[in-house]
Image (tube, rainbow over all chains, first blue to last red; front, side, top):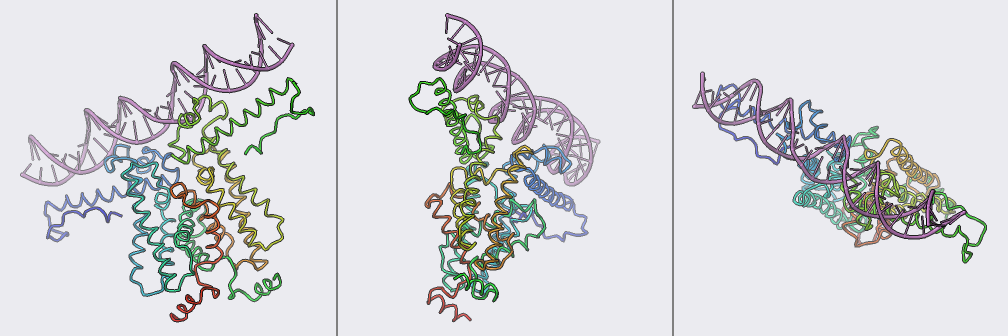
Length: 234
Length: 234
DNA sequence: GGACTTGTTTACCCGCGGGTAACATACCTA
DNA sequence: TAGGTATGTTACCCGCGGGTAAACAAGTCC
């Protein structure tokens, strides 16, 4: 989660045993990172439950059993909390793209892999924040930042679709609209997943990918019975 | 938009000419309805622009060039404003279901028709409100009401899917997950449509339906070139 | 012409919640 | 042991915005 931030200054010394006076300070630093992450996760959960506006910093602090100023010790504003949650969620998706980039399989399969990770990310604790971080709630600079990240992902999906059409693994289609449809379906998971957790994120993502792949119109590979019914209608 | 509310008391008299003292009062009543609708539409537009929480009642009033108490003259609370917008949007979708119910075509085609109307509704001025009305922002009773309406639509889509699977016009699938995927993709339109209005709601809906129908995996009916490429891979 | 209704305004209330100042404590370092 | 730094706390500020009271303006009806 903190991959963006610089890691603590690493001296050459072994981290263990040595009673170096630096030891304690390094530990404190790591402690601080842990606490900061806890604050962000607490915020994410509270945003999940109540939404960004209805979640107060007192709520978030209470969840951690501390007081509001303590939260402000780790974070400069409520807005930043939302932003960090957003980044945490989006980072999972970016990782999926990186992971898949150099796979030697048809683009459709790479796309499917990305979409599965995407779905899992949306169903994760940061999903809600990632999906609903509204530019209206953010300062212009953060809004720009978030838009850029969203756009990067959108473009990544479109690219995979184009590649798939090119290599024949994806039905010719409008990449932009198709990307919107796919991402939209997955994003929307964040809206209902809280209420209905009968499936895991992975299961949902897999089910969605099946729908995307096959489409609604029956294929010739459909069951004989269905095929017979289809013929009868015609 | 006001289909829910009782219409003004209709006397047997012709509405025109007669200098009946009732005339004025009826006109005022109609006037009032018009103004009320204007208030709700103004709220919808303001919610679109800023989001529910960031749109103040002063903003909405200003948009109508009146003052806040005037808005409260037509509506009892901000919450109700959101609710009315929601209902206005959802009503379009319910109408689509009614319209399609008795059509003598395969269920897939009825589903497509509903989805197209659905998409148009989401791209309409009430789309945002319909899609983002959060139970967290609403009183329990209104929240229940909205959930019921949402569920009704969800069940309607699932039903059409089941019927389609039965009559062979739809590929066998999990109705619940498929309905979520379809509705999610369409709902999400509300998130990006404001920014990117290069297409009309109808065009978007049509494009989406194409994606849903065909799916990503190429069909045998694909272009000869694509077919050739597919064979070559295998 | 005077009471009653309808629509709109001005002027206000007040609580919630983001954010901060200033103080308390513990712990590390010299 | 003194001084600094990291981590919390209590107690507060204050503005925004939802909501309202009460006055005011303009018909409408008898």
